[in-house]
Image 1: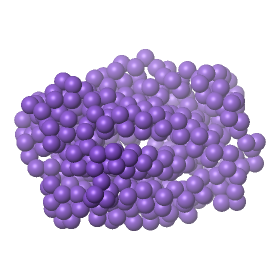
Image 2: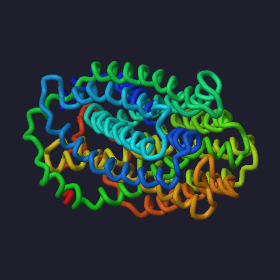
Image 3: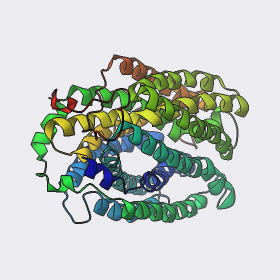
Length: 462
């Protein structure tokens, strides 16, 4: 084990963590701007959009486990994960540019088909990247103390990507490269982000030093692995609870620009300030929450930050202007930072337990299976959008209805508050497993919740 830790240590945490910057920019640009781009600017009916998003979510949920399983079974001299990362980066980049560059002559069914095809392709290649990138975290950093640091660094890079892909994007698309009511700025911005993201992902992938030991293991079998996963109660408990957090933030991400336009009555570019406050608060408190994780363990932070996140949406709903919305966004950022610092670590404990009990490293398919719950957040998004047409008459930018201001308050604040509250209640009811990754006896004292050497021999997942 000492040899294993020494070998894995050759991958610097920062080199691994910067990959999160590259994987986050494309998907956040897509999710953060797709409603504004296709519904509000191009006039796609919100009901058709919602139907596509439901199908998108189902495909996304199905292909994740398949991609994770293929990654776990990959055996090459370059490792299991790196070949997929190097192939997926340019494919996602090209698909994202096409997504934001529909031919000007498209409308009606043609526009729906273009939107559907490239939304699904972007989703598939994003899933490919994240199934492999996420699987490296527990492998490269087996102890929770070092894992917390690596996770904190990568989440920090994700927040930097959020600043660029969310807060800066409205300025680039509406002022630098385009205008408030045209689409050209999105195409240019997508090209810029595609080059940046692809470069960063390739840089990360070539610098990763994967553990060679899992390559020598017997390839996992699909049916056996599926049985282990679906019969593990913690998979369902933690997966569904995490989905509450991911779905809540997904609604905020996809609706914040229209919340600024309709609920606050401000230009879309002002989303920069609101998003900036949330992200800066997240950056600042990520370090604080990480220290708490190292002192009290990931489950403690997971539960506490769920509560903060749920409460934060109440003042955001009541905000009447940019200043009050920004103050509420500060609280959202604190709760979001806690989830960033802890959620992946809680999930990683389930992966650790599986490796310890069954003697196989199946991080790819396990993480992809967990991603099933988060990806189904697309169904939540589709249903939430459809409800705006039913309850408030909002169909598109051309037909906003009589209460678009209330519609987007409900979408960005009320629905996320409900989801986060359910998640908080579930988090306190769940028995999170200990960190069961085989410990290095020379690595120091375990963190709170870590198992002592030998504990991995006890218990069962099934």
